[in-house]
Image (cartoon, rainbow, N blue to C red; front, side, top):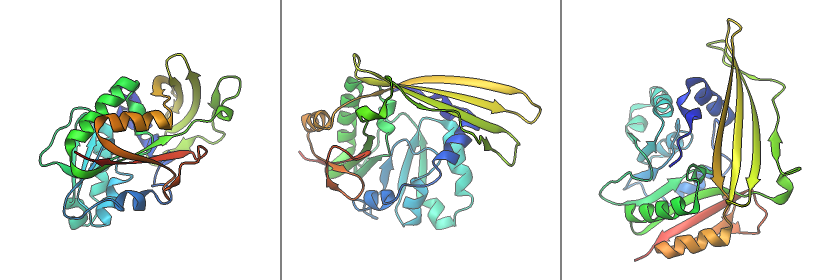
Length: 261
């Protein structure tokens, strides 16, 4: 599994939370449609609790897994502001989602928006699907969401989200953070190369430039379904959280995968 240093850097973890502070419209309701209050939800790549906390606030128990101590620390800090019953419904684990094991099996496993990108190859994803299958009880569900890339997303072979005009400012520390993202398809290896650059300016005027590169798989919907069915899942792909039939156009592809023996 890929390790993303971004999430271990306290300032960049803060920047991530500022950019994705809350769930997308319909996201929480979609996951909870398949949940049961009698058993915990297993949430991989939980981060600082963008979904974990709403799940718990809705009355569900959550086993929240992440490979970043920094992000889990941010989640623990947020738990302090919750009422005791809600906070007690959240159990965190510092673990790799590709090897995490637990008994009894779960009725629902979720992998939030585009977190599949942490697995850089088709082979790694196939192995992960097998692992998830082993964590689910019969008729359990595995829900995950993949970002769909379109040809017109790229100009001259790249998609660039340039340096922001207004960097983020941390009011408590006085630190500012600017970022630039470059996405480049690598069709030979079936991946998108993701380059992230950050400019961190400290109150004393010091400037730190950080550049990180990762790779995410480019896999067609039909191929995902074949991979899931090969494991033993009965899988359906939807366009967005409203579960409309996949039209090949939506930005989010939502997979509902049922464990069958």
